[in-house]
Length: 122
Image 1 (cartoon, rainbow, N blue to C red):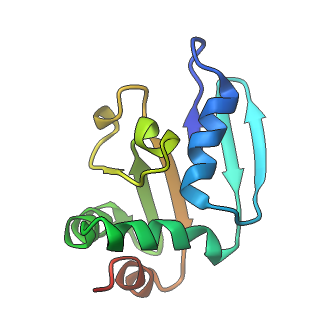
Image 2 (image 1 turned 30 degrees about the horizontal axis):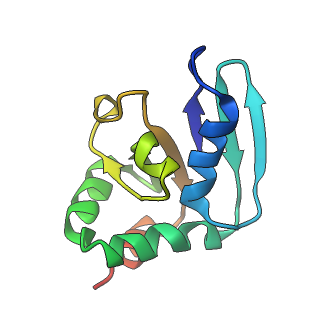
C-alpha cells in the first residue's frame, strides 16, 4: 500500500488513513520523501475491507472495479484518502476521485479470481 504525502500534509495522518484500511494486522511502515509505503503479507489485512464492502452493500460495484483493475495475478485498488482517515472503505475508479490522491493498494495473489470472489461475496 502506498500514498503520496504532499508538502502541506502531515505524514502521520496519511499513515493513519492507510492503517485504517488494514485494521490491526501486522505490517511494516516506511516513510520516504513524499510517500508512505506499508507492506504486509498477512491476509488478515484484507478482513476490514471485506467486512466493510459487505456491510455497506457495495459488493457488486466493488467487484466490477476489481475486475477492471486486475492484471493477471495483480490487483491494484484505489481508496479515497479522506474516507479512509474516517475509517471508511471507499474504492475509487480513478486517481482523480480522491482530491489529495488515492491510497493505492497493490495485491499480488496467485488466485486473484478467488480473492475477488471472497472480497465481494454475498
